[in-house]
Length: 217
Image (spheres, rainbow, N blue to C red):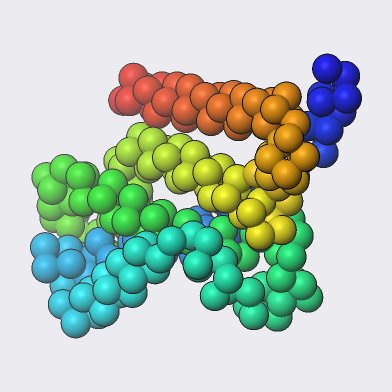
């Protein structure tokens, strides 16, 4: 039992490292993309049909790739940025690339749910498009954005476990190398339980924040 717990410590830390890093970079990539997708849609603040369709297709293509295949395809980019394509830090690159389109669609969907009346009122008061986006749309959509971010983190946790199949480190790697290849059922079960606990904590924490924001309105 003690041996199993000791084995779980380092991979759990690696998983947190991958998830936190990937969440940050996927937000950096996906948030502005989601805003652009929203404001350039036919009913957006700045309709640009050609740009919207082009970005939409790119997002759809990236979302359609199975993560394992995408991770292999992004190996050269990981090697260019990190210096290697194997390991926990290198895995953050494909995780971010895989999650960014998901984040973009979540941001787009959340912003489109903002009451058009609030946008029209801001426009009537002379607000610029940038002011409407930053001071009206994003604050109004914040509960939905937090709920979407929660789903994103949970998806990244799942991706990080799959990354262990090809040398990504973390709990997925532990479950495969020790649990599966060495027939350590205790390690396999322990890895799964830790992942389940992390997912549950993220879901509860994210839901609480979103509900608190709704109640304070």
